[in-house]
Image (cartoon, rainbow, N blue to C red; front, side):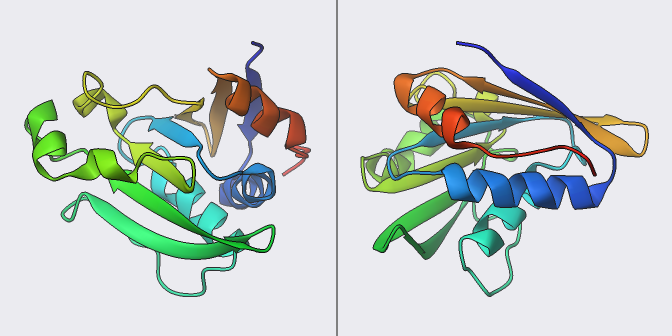
Length: 161
């Protein structure tokens, strides 16, 4: 499964990639977001959610660990759960919080800092790594399942920003 690597020249590129990803999503996807603090994980998620029609504020769920959003995708109501596991002390906290129930064929789960609970998380369909590079970001999208491959095949993105 071939990874897609792009360079985003500025924040507008991250927003454009998030919008393009939104058009390629399908229910049941699990997406891991990797990157240092400030690499753009929340900005990418915010752009996806806004492109999916969410009109309210999208904050990093650093303290709540998870923020649910209800969107419409291809005419059906879909839950998107945005996780930020940065402050978790152990993977067991993820299980104790009951978060495993969100991982199903009707929900899209986007997880920042998945390495904090990797031992108990379902494997990702798509792993996205972001790194600050000058004034922009380098992004690698790695499909890790058939559903991840399908998502990248639907992705229409020209990184000219």
